Length: 441
Image 1 (spheres, rainbow, N blue to C red):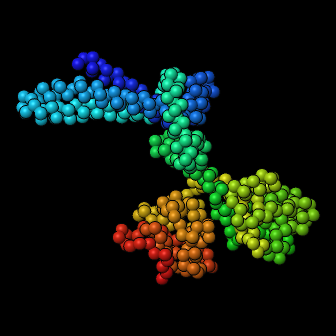
Image 2 (tube, helix red, strand yellow; image 1 turned 90 degrees about the horizontal axis):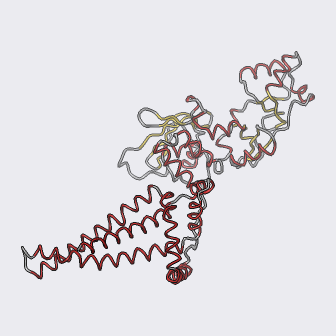
Image 3 (cartoon, rainbow, N blue to C red; image 1 turned 45 degrees about the horizontal axis):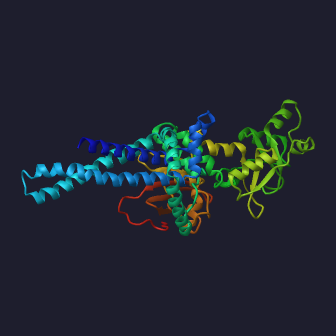
């Protein structure tokens, strides 16, 4: 019995080795292995090589696990069944004792293999995959060489079946932005990544999907200077609404002539020179402005700024009407989010009762994060909360209009000349029924 128990222990150890080798190789992170390989650890390079073509490696693992399982069943039945049966004969008849003894022997051996040869080794392999993969890759390479004929046969059959079923033949190691966001989310849960840092990373990836309209200064808020404005009017406008850059227009805001820096205006004041824009234009201070379409994404806007060597642009729609202006600082504020925006400038504010007070120009991605809504109706037709309400109501929203969606109620609190100024967002009571497509008072 002692020899048989020793054999079972060896079989469990062998199965544990193959389990660790399998799970650690599958879970080992390529980026960490590459860093170890760059530091001179040749074992990490061997693991990377195996991961690029793991077919032979996992074939050996499966051969080893199945052989150990079969041998464990054969040996285990002969070791423990007679002893269980002998004990049970003291309380029951021999035939029944033999049957129950076999069942107890089977359960005991199976339990030992499940816990010691499968669960514990796999947990170890998941907790420290790179180190264990580097430790097992050497012995596994030796076994692959020794079992090469069997590996060749089984691997060939597996490859043929994979081709028939249309399964991928190689591991896909491409890292997508979804992988990066998942890692940062996991880091935020463990405290390794601050919540503000996680938000910045998410905002960076949103640059490819958010349009310039989500970050621009809208048309009605643009402070522009007219070419015919006299010195007194220019001084008052600059004093009342200080900005670093001013749009210069002709008859109206849609007749864009260029832009001028506030520092150039201040310099003329200090030099006792006239502030009239005609004089500034003659001096070359009115610069050509960058004009971009309103369907541009923020990532494309950054490329435009970089190629034009500008940090200020005018946004126009398909009818060549000005819809807003955007600066490089607007784009970077979108990326940095709450890390740079003061509290009184936040577009969506959480109240003590769990509701939200939001500006109508709040971008949909910001609402998605705050409310946890992943699916929005008719995506692509709007970029802001006001646009969402217009699409749902099929008209210009009025005060007290409300829309229900995904368990939230969006009620218009204030409208300023057809512009949705403030919206109260409250969670609907549980059991209120399915969210309505749209409701209005």
